[in-house]
Length: 229
Image 1 (cartoon, rainbow, N blue to C red):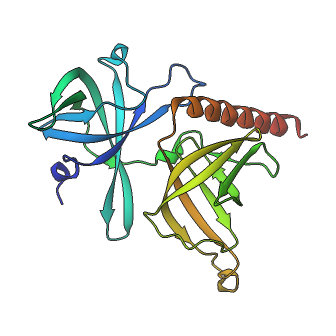
Image 2: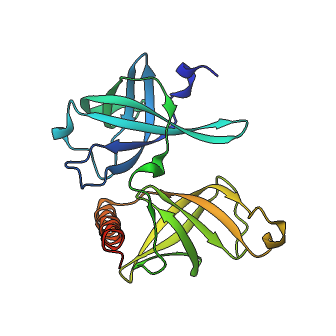
């Protein structure tokens, strides 16, 4: 498959908007590609919307492709060139869209690389699947790595319901299972399984609350490292 064929109409994508300052966590929003003409990419307006003050800014567009070894997330850098108020989606309907210009070719990208936090033993951040608490190994705004005691039998690509508990307040989210694996010691295969999850459809309100919590945890961990407390 050539690189030109990777970016095509109907592809589900994630948009990563630039942070406003060094302590902000980048905003991540879902979208879909409507059309591709050379370096021009037409995408659906996101929810919440990308505002028109972002015109001219560069964003990261990420998407998954299937390979023999599994799924790989790729990224391209693109510039916002136009906000289209009446994009003709079908012969019967029009919708809001955004015109992007692709700046770079696709390259491998780890969505969870932004502010990934390896959590301390005790924290005010918990994750539940079907009301069962799972062990958080690490987490970021984009997803998490968890372990559980064999309660579930999910496969890569499954969309599941999760609850993210932040300071004892629950937030319901969808998540996609990116991969599952077992411990290297086969004796634990019946008792322990690992999963990598990607969060889907997180609202701006939850993103803001979640990102502040991640920064708070990072600061606390740095303080403990500096002062050995």
